[in-house]
Amino acid sequence: MSITSLLQQATLLPEHYRTLSRTDMESRILAIKKKLGRQLFIPGHHYQKDEVIQFADATGDSLQLAQLSAANKEAKHIVFCGVHFMAETADMLTTEKQHVYLPDMRAGCSMADMADIYQTEQAWSILQQLFGDTIIPLTYVNSTAAIKAFTGHYGGACVTSSNAKEMVKWAFSQKQRILFLPDQHLGRNTAYDLGVPLENMAVWNPHTNTLETEQSSENIQVILWKGHCSVHEGFTVQHTEMVRQAHPNMRIIVHPECSREVVAAADDAGSTKYIIDTINNAPSGSAWAIGTEMNLVNRMMLHHSDKQIISLNKNFCPCLTMNRIDLPHLLWSLESIEQGKPHNRIQVDPHIAEEARSSLERMLARG
Image 1: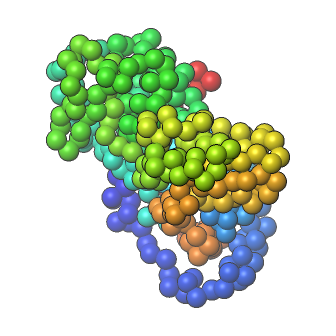
Image 2 (image 1 turned 45 degrees about the vertical axis):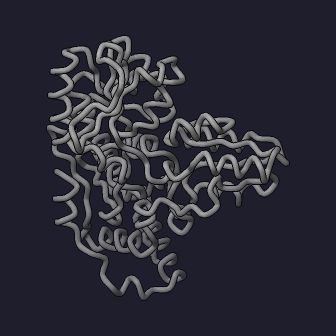
């Protein structure tokens, strides 16, 4: 089922939830958590705001939280505080007796939405004509279930920002070329780190159905889908230059969803987990400019008062779609479950789920 059709089914937050005080909402959430006990599991993504993350039973990245949901066999109700594709993955990995809910169905991901299955199938047909059977598809887990199923169907796999290098190596052991969906920056940064020249990478533009490159087709090794994360694309080389000027001794660490130019200008780059671990293990008194989502950066500032931490872009906003999940929506979701009238359940079509799981399983088989 598409995000669009699910949104059409979604009900809007009842207005009275907006009139409740924060104290009232927090006390109600705590009471429901106590009442439902182990039947309820609330995973919270790192990018959620503090008012929501305080109630999370586990925090982590999208795949980690989906795996924790699947491992928690006692939980009948999984209220996923993240975005749509994350809840889809949790639904695909959990049992039929476990139900996954998204507190606000508008919590999508602009990157995931940049590659829909119709565009992808059309691109695949054209690319097969151009390159023959020499391409294997990889998709970032930040993609819809339908795109994951597409990669599963054609022998490909999912990747995370943590294991992207290992999965790209694996993909090149299978085929001569890779189609990397939907984030061009993670694909470009990963392939470049593995020694693929930038000139051997082309960008597929789904709006014009054209391959953007000046190279001859025989030299193309990586085809990058023209998608991006609106949060991480907001960091620029100019931001790194301003930090270098104002804080000469400060190290810059960014997420690989940032552009190639920003990653090259930074001191280090890695997944959300890598960034968190790096800051956790950094010596007291060290100074860091972090290029990732603002809620997470603010939380690291709070937890590491012994270190100087700033955002690489001090004027940057948090992920707007992730932030659609707030206390009123979380309370509404929990009360609907308590009353036996749950809403906003995420259910992936069984056929799509089967092929998508094969894509996830190929990745998980490689650790």
